[in-house]
Each structure stands twice: as C-alpha cells, then as structure tokens.
Image 1 (cartoon, rainbow, N blue to C red):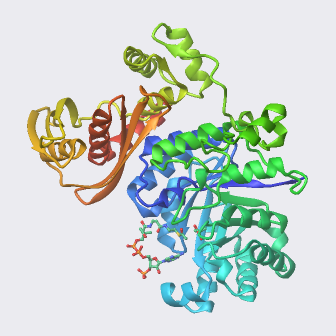
Image 2 (image 1 turned 30 degrees about the vertical axis):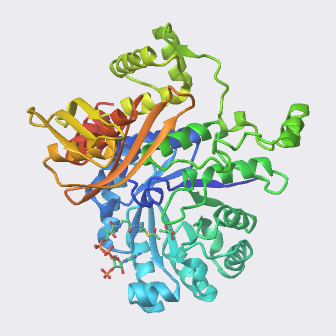
Image 3 (image 1 turned 90 degrees about the horizontal axis):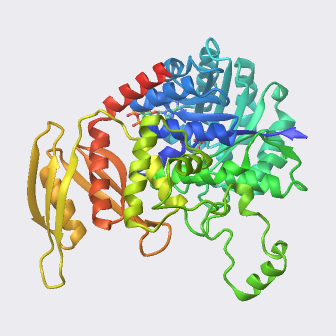
Length: 517
Ligand SMILES: CC(=O)SCCNC(=O)CCNC(=O)[C@H](O)C(C)(C)COP(=O)(O)OP(=O)(O)OC[C@H]1O[C@@H](n2cnc3c(N)ncnc32)[C@H](O)[C@@H]1OP(=O)(O)O
Ligand SMILES: CC(C)C(=O)C(=O)O
C-alpha cells in the first residue's frame, strides 16, 4: 500500500487564523501532542516573521524527536538563514520555501516576471540546499497558475535540489476535479518528477478543502498538509482529523497508510481549540459535540437496534471515552493521578500538587468534576509560566441590579508588587468589571472580542472566557475559567495582559527548562 505523509501546519498556517496568538509553552504542548498523534512533519512556524516565532520553532525543533520539524521561509536569503538558525538542531532539518506562480500574484504582488520567479526559486532552493537536506518548495497559488509554467518551474526547482513539491490551493478556488487534474498533469509532464514527492495544501474558502485533498491523493500526492480543526488563514485549511478518518473509513476508495494514531484525535482537537480560543462548532465533522449524537426518533430507533444504521465512525475510534472513573469530593491523589495520566497529561510533582489543590477547591463547589473540567484546569497549569511578575487579582465585587448602574470594585497586585484598587461603572456587569480592570492597568488596552462558553453541562458547569485585545498596540488573546462568569472574565482579562508583558520572560524560561530537560 502507498504511504501518505501527514504534514501538520497548525502552528504556522493555523496560527494565521485572525486573532490566534499562541505562546511558546502552548506551542510546545501542541507540538508534543502532534507528535503523539503521529504526524510525519510539523510546520512549527515562520522563523523570520518574529522573534517569538523564531524561539518557538527553535524550541520545538530541539524537543520533538519522532516527527520532522520544518519552518516556512520566503524565497529570500535572509528568511532562509533565519530558518536555518531556528531549525539546525532538529533531528532532520527541513525547510519549506515558497514563491507565488500565478499570473495575479506574480504581476500584482511580487512585481516579477515569470522568468524572474523561476530564477529566484532556483537560486533560493540551491542556496538552501547548501544546508538543509530536505527542501519543500511551494508554488503559492498553484491552482490559479498556468499548468505549463508549473511544469517548467517544477522541473528546474527539482534539479536545484527540492525534494518535495507542494502545489497549494492558496485561495480555496479549485474544485476536486481541477485540483486532482493539476497533479496528474504534473506527474505526466515533469520529466524529473520521480526525484521528488508531491504534496497538497488546501484552503476551505468554498468548503472544498478536504474533498480537494482526497482528490489530490487519488492523483498521486504522497504528502497531505492541513491543520487540526481545520483552522488557518481566512476560512481555514483542510482539517487533518477529517482527512485521517476519511482515509480510514473509506479504505475501499483509499488504499493508503499513514502513521496517524486516530485515538489521539479528540485530545489533539481539544488542546488546539483551548489554546487558540477557536471553539469547535457542534456540527463539525469528527470532533464536533454533535458528531456522534442522534436526535431524531427514527435515528435513535435505528441506533438502538444496530449502531451501523446511522453511525459510520465510532466515538472510540477518535478517542472519545466513556467517563468510567468519576472524580468528586472524596477522590484522593491516586485516583486523580491515574485519571490525568489516562487523559494524556504528564505533570511534574509540583504541578501535580497544584492541580490536585485546584481540583479539591473545585469539588467544594461542584458535585462531580468532569473530564472537561479537569482538561481546563490541567491545560492552564501545564502552560502557566511560573516565577514571573504579573498582574494578580486580589479581590473584586460587582453590584448589579436591573434598576442600578452596574458597578465593579477591583483590587489588584501590580507587577511591581503594589496593591491598587478602584471602581468603575459599565452598561452591564461584565463591562463594569472590564472598565475597572482597564483603569488599574497602566498599559493601553483595547478589548476587541469577548466570548463566553460553558465547559460541560449542568448548572454548576465551569465558565470559560476567551478575550482578544490590543495591549500597547500588540494584538493578543487569552482565556480564563472559573465557576463564576465574572471571575472567569477577570481572569481572562489579566491572563491576556500578562501574556504580552512577560512574553520575553516566558521564552527565556522555556529555553532554560528545555536546556535542563
Ligand atoms: C500563503 C501563505 O500563507 S504565505 C505565509 C503568510 N504568513 C505571513 O505572512 C505571516 C507572517 N508574516 C509577517 O510577519 C510579515 O509579513 C513578514 C515579517 C514576513 C514580512 O513583513 P514586511 O517586511 O513588513 O513585508 P510585508 O508583509 O508588508 O510584505 C511582504 C513582502 O514580501 C514579499 N513576498 C511575499 N512572498 C514572498 C516570497 N515567497 N518570497 C519573497 N518575497 C515574498 C512581498 O512581495 C512583499 O515585498 P515588498 O515589501 O518588496 O513589496
Ligand atoms: C505557503 C503556502 C504553502 C501556503 O500556506 C498557501 O499557499 O496557502
């Protein structure tokens, strides 16, 4: 059977989703989970785009051993040099360099003639080949490019040393028949195509990303690019969990193997959703809450008689477990440790104790602690940056009544260790709280988005708040959870501000932890 390599770009194209902003510890956690999920290659970022991305790519390249790590570069020497610095310690350094080939992009964006685009691509692949053993070259906007021009440029970049040729549907324009045909044409017309493998990379502007990916596989592609939960630029990328499950369920149509461990899908999806703040819609294929729910009578009747009537995927296949061990007020350390290990968490003794304390506090307020509650607590603790000076919530109070002006009073400790307090009003209780926090923080803040969700079900469910804001001009997102909506809102606000303030310190700390490991 033909093997298809899975190339995950959640940490690069996925992070290009508007408002998504992952810190280095969150990226490392996602990278470790992608390794468990079995991706062959992970694109950890775009090293030349920022110092934070550079550090994250370097940290991931140093710590991930069972997947190849790559980074994106434009077709310029300086991007390639920076990518090399970030990736040189990887087990198998791999570069992803791209240049657009469509008439629209060449003329209006790059201001280059087709001949110049060929020359730049060849020069940059040759330059990168002096260091990188593996080079993927992408023809950005390939699906709107002239096929014979593609044949010409691909032949030359393969001669220059490219080992993977990626032909993206950058703007999600192609139909499955067109996209599949492009790969067939390239395979049949590029004379040296046997020296490289073909890769696809699809966007979902017309909702066709997964269909186009499958069409590409049917036409000879042996590498598939995509993201977890389909996140990414604009409407997102092909969703890798959907591709993985489609290949598995329809083996009759797709006799291909991958290294993916399907039961890691749920955890990978949950982690990406939580860290990015991009909530998975209920009706999302494979990982949505309703993907395995049967609502109508005729369906329920069928499923009760035989699940095969309406269920083509089992929840267990993608790692959705029935909740066999319920934790509550009377649970002890052993059951807690066992549970969290089964959920895929490995915590240091110190963080385990912190998690146990948080769990016990929650049991005072909540009868049963669900897996979702634990996931929320544990991911927060696992990615918390310790020993940094930050804004800390001391206390708050909100007065709200239908006949009163909502008013909040907040006390905070500042990063300098000074206790400050004030009060403000707002048009609602959350706004009053946000206005008060804003007044106490010396950085300039503009809140741009606020989202409230409940974690799990029931009237005692945890509240989770995701916010987006600009802090002194930097766009950033953060989250907070608590049993109370207002407390979760205050935590989310401070979490976001603290992320910007101490990003540099977090990077330094993660590096030190890595060096120790
Ligand atoms: C299809 C994709 O997803 S490609 C990846 C897109 N991802 C991102 O852009 C996220 C990260 N990007 C960034 O942080 C910034 O855009 C940077 C740091 C890379 C560059 O920032 P700036 O130097 O300010 O340039 P800016 O983004 O405004 O413009 C891009 C420049 O790169 C050029 N360029 C675009 N693609 C390429 C390429 N593949 N190779 C070489 N140059 C390129 C553009 O023509 C433009 O050049 P110009 O300034 O001479 O007109
Ligand atoms: C850089 C390339 C592969 C890309 O992200 C796209 O074309 O969508």
